[in-house]
Image (cartoon, rainbow, N blue to C red; front, top):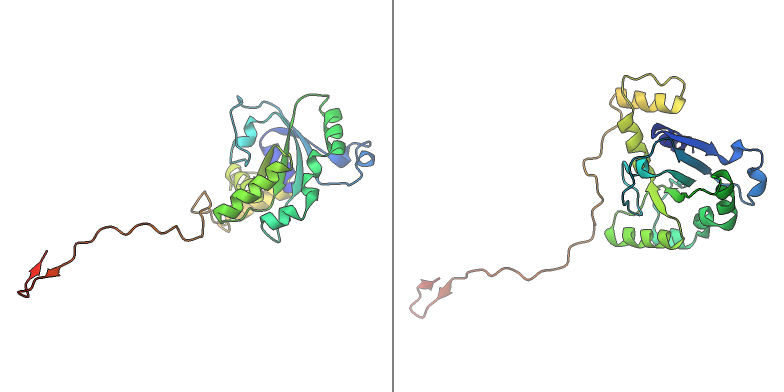
Amino acid sequence: MQLVREYFELHLFHVLSYWQHEELPARLSEPAALLFVEHINPEPARDIEFLLRPGDVAQLERAMVEIRAWHADRFYPSMIESNPVLGHVVGDEARALAGSIFGGNGYVTILVIGELPQAARQRERSLHLLQELGVDHVIEFPTVLQEMLARISAYGLYAPSQTLQTLRLLKRYNLVRWQQLEFAFPIEAPPPTNPPPVDAAVVSDEGEEAE
């Protein structure tokens, strides 16, 4: 939760954790890792997809964010189907709380998850199931970490934040390796295609080859 909090702070959001207000814990029957964020100076709005990519959060003005990282496994369709708690962020209690915090102003809901499947078919199915829960956006934890590392200078001063200082040192001593590919690719074999025509030698009755 601290990583996600500082991720939004690096993007110039004001961040309120649900326990930082004396009235908030009593109003949630199921305490959760909720953050309420508001951008100081959002960039001009543009269309962004359901799955947030690097740089997308800068377009948002307000959001209620729930962290369900669950790093032990990927978010396969079976996991999503068996965990209705993932829709907590769009429940009546959470929405009422966000409405009071944001003073009735518009906001979006964001679910922070660990990692989606790599296989394209399962990945699309997982995103579809998450979208059916009613959340506005989903962001993967690797995206959060990649953006934080990109914004941190290896030679900057981040002593007030143990989180940022640790990430800076990992970057400074080359203990972080950037991924070579930005997008997940399917691991299933591609469907078979018709083989291209091939010229074959034909042997005539006289025993000579004809092309």
